Amino acid sequence: MLENAGVIIGMILIVLGLLFFVTEMIGVFKFKYVLNRMHAAAIGDTLGIGIILLGLILIEGISFTSLKIALVIIFLWLASPVSSHLISRLELTTDENGDEHYEKIEVKE
Image 1 (cartoon, helix red, strand yellow):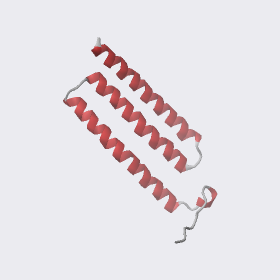
Image 2 (image 1 turned 180 degrees about the vertical axis):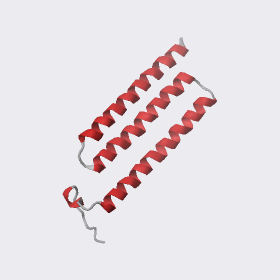
Image 3 (image 1 turned 45 degrees about the vertical axis):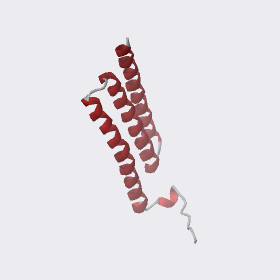
């Protein structure tokens, strides 16, 4: 009975992760500004992949494969936000029409 519960919960998590991916795609196509699109894609990727891989761990059970999947989750949770942040910083520094999208504030000490 417990094995079936793990498989059912794992499948529910996989479907939930796919729903995060669908929401991410809607956000990427709906938003007009590139940084808003980047934010939707980064959040959707991190949550969607994490939840799907967690579902796979529950389906697999405790094994060496589930340990490897957990290491992939940790790597993606560290790498995806960092890479999205770097790409966003590149967009901010090279955007010629930035005044249309955001206001620059000077900080004085």
